[in-house]
Length: 102
Image (cartoon, rainbow, N blue to C red):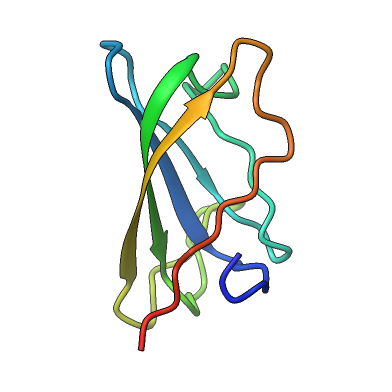
């Protein structure tokens, strides 16, 4: 969310702070909804603290690969949201607020 509005086509990255595990990633849909992917077969993120980063690409061109976003048409904007904790029971319905820039 940015200014209370869903952000489509944003790349979400959760990088574990203390565990030597891979990063989880997602791309938001047209409603700003995302589902983290840990690997090609596993969804979610490891339990614990993560540095959270969001890249907003804005409008994208057509994709050459079905189901994948196309190339960005505008320079991306990068945001570091700080630390978020994934509890043992999961983080369903997690809302991320992207700060406004002037």
